[in-house]
Length: 196
Image (cartoon, rainbow, N blue to C red):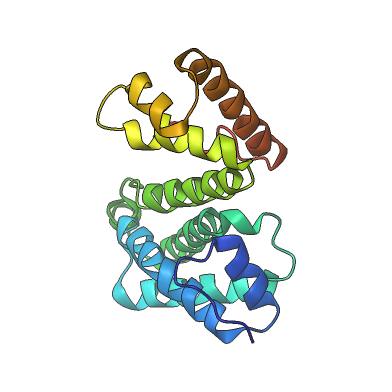
């Protein structure tokens, strides 16, 4: 068994868990169980029903671990599966409940409980694509994009730090962003979660 780093990408964890690595499975459970419980709370399930749904969602993943279509988006897969299981519980309750009004109150609006996980999955995919860029592009984007979050980048300071002419920074940055975009498009990630 290999050591699973705490910051391992979701796809790595899924592949390792599919290969029988219990630590990878434990990390998936640690990382996503809170999301599943919050989805159950959004659907206003009882504690017992929520516990069943969380357990069943993990069982569904375990059954499909080796064939999951996009391991990098396992958080979204879990969230969708959990929602389906919540709705199944609510439908069963409706059949046995004396009043559909009670069920309507339990359903409630579905909140953005999985938004953070989906955003995290997207960010992990972007970071993975970023690491596949050449060293020069990684450096340019790190200085002109990542380190410029507090305001517009200083091209003079960036040119000095990167040892490049000021006039070539803009075109180089554009080419590097285009390469990153191509890597994301090739992996089916670009535009995923773009509303955040």
